[in-house]
Amino acid sequence: MIYLDYAATTPMSEKAINIYSQVATNYYGNSSSLHDMGLVSQTILEESRKTIADFLNGEAKGVYFTSGGSESNYFAIHSLLKGNNKKGKHIISTKLEHSSIANTLADLQNDGYEITFVPVNTEGRIDLDALAKAIRPDTVLATIHHGNSEIGTIQDLVSIGAILKKHDIIFHSDCVQTFGKIEIDVNRANLDSISVSSHKIYGPKGVGACYINPTRTWKPVIPGTTHENGFRPGTVNVPGIAAFITAAEEIFPIMNSEQKRFQGLREKLVHGLQGDSWKVSQIGPTSNRLEHIIGLSIAGIEGQYIMLECNRYGVAISTGSACSVGMQKPSKTLLAIGKSTEEAKQFIRLSLGKLTTDAEIENTINIFQSFLKKHCNDL
Image (cartoon, rainbow, N blue to C red):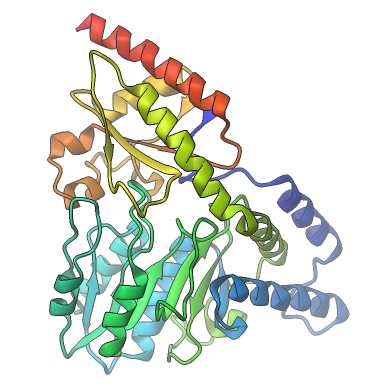
């Protein structure tokens, strides 16, 4: 199988697997226990916290480990709102957010919060003027993602953060798709909170982290919680966290060179997929994008058909975010950038990773060419 769905999840690196096994075997004490085995686990946990903070240019005391990006988003938003409930009940966001954010916002509306969704342009980039105009005296928080999981658009967090800081609005960003891919500097972007995930960077599933600016006030979602300084309940997954850190330490030194490599593979793929009887279009920005995420549409052919044909020939791709699969709805990202429902249904996503080779791209091109020619000849 040629795997081209790295934006959905990645295979664990061999080094991360080995570290997980070593820590689980030798340092299995509960990090909250006061005996020596617990203290060793606690030391691993605190060193891991420092490493994540360094990658973000943040402070170790602002790092809280979670079960993944979705939980980080949920707990960050609720904790910050709970700690600032006197500031107001107005939130700013976009229609492009991950389902964990979108579902959280929908639930908050039932609790009396009002959500303003700032429009984006045809490349999926937020309208900064509209953002500034959306701010009200009762605006308490803005949640705007960093990188789009379907078309690879990178939001200008620095400019967004500067606008929000002027009004002392809490700024949360879902950085799951960008962590380990491009630079994230929480101080430069005036970010108050971000979410990251292990399984997007060759670490284990079920592990993630949330960063909250230590100067921001927040309150535990569940009163009486003691783990992670009250941020979330449950015994901390120290082996998983150690493996997460190992994967991050492997990927960060090569992230810039990898994006350049992905750019070359991307150009080769898109050029090679073109044919005389069909038209392949790239969806999303032409620059300032995540090069490993390739959003495409083939005119007149539904993405679901392309995905199934690819699977039949041994190529794993997707029709959008894995967290929205099964909803039987067109991509909300495509609709938000102005595509029709019909166009949105033609969308497919291919995403590259560190194991993607030139040969795999060539084989993928040949497979696409083969079944597309057959499809067009059968019409």
